[in-house]
Length: 443
Ligand code: GLA
Image 1 (cartoon, rainbow, N blue to C red):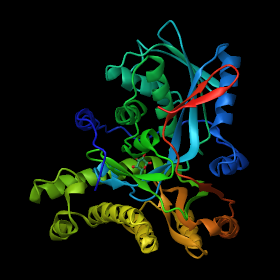
Image 2: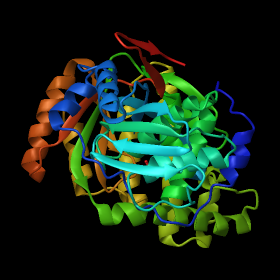
Image 3: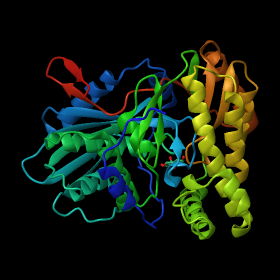
Image 4: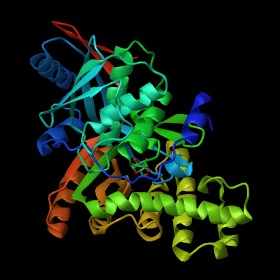
């Protein structure tokens, strides 16, 4: 398959990313209202309005003009928990974003303000520490830490940060704040933007400074996303291909409105540790195996005796999911939707039964979606234990799907879901503000 090559530095810096600390904190800001969310994602409100709003708030707070950068959240179409196993994923950037207004300062201070929380924080670029403190500001400060540690000398800056990615929904609010502030900090210090390097350093910030052992998918697609396309990413080489989505297919995201927090935090890292343990055990018989990416279904079957039943099922999910990602990308490449439904259903079942990261609300949402007209496939998306499902829906039926799923889910679960009809969007970009008119510059 035709992929964009990544520069050599990526391998070495990724190899150093390995941290035993646990996934703990999400940015602690208030989410958007349901109405705002629905109209944003359906494109009725443009990013320019939000940029204007950020500029106004920046001026009111800091008294000067600013440059505004934005980075999107994402939805993963297929390929769950495969990224940290050096496998394949197929995410798309979406129309929910985080915006960072920035103006450089003469000193080495970072003065941060969260528009969502109405809360300020300060940090000293010469004394950032190496671990966060459990605050929302760990994300921007962690990114500054990772950039400086990688040799990018930054300037002090005033930063106003405001986002509309729904929180705890598995749509990557963390990556959006990391990438938007990273892009802003690099630009304010006059550094050229290397998107892959920015993604890797944002992941490092989250792994090491924040303490969440996430893979590369979210930051990567937030940096590289392309309108109308998903990205087929090889998470080992970081090569990727922009995959055009069939024109008649809408991405519809159904938010279950639940996040089983106790499970979500610890269990993500437990799954990761289980995969690592399985690699250790399998490599006794298969010395070439460096990650589950390297194991075939046949090899897994032949060496089943080396693994506990649980580890065997974890491996089976990763190995079969990697294949499904490539199969879905291939269908899209051929402009086909036939076969999509089965691949999406198999992915959901594998997450439910083998990887055990689904929950009742997600299963009910997927089951309801599968009964609607014009649906080409449905599955849970993201880390699991709540959050959202992703549905491929015929454009003609999307509105009907939204209304019916909403009503049926509310009847079954007793919660009204948010349902977003989305477009695949552009990755991180600069939105430059002049006094009277705003000019959008895409780098
Ligand atoms: C979270 C992580 C990603 C990925 C997904 C599961 O979103 O941030 O790196 O592992 O879970 O696919």
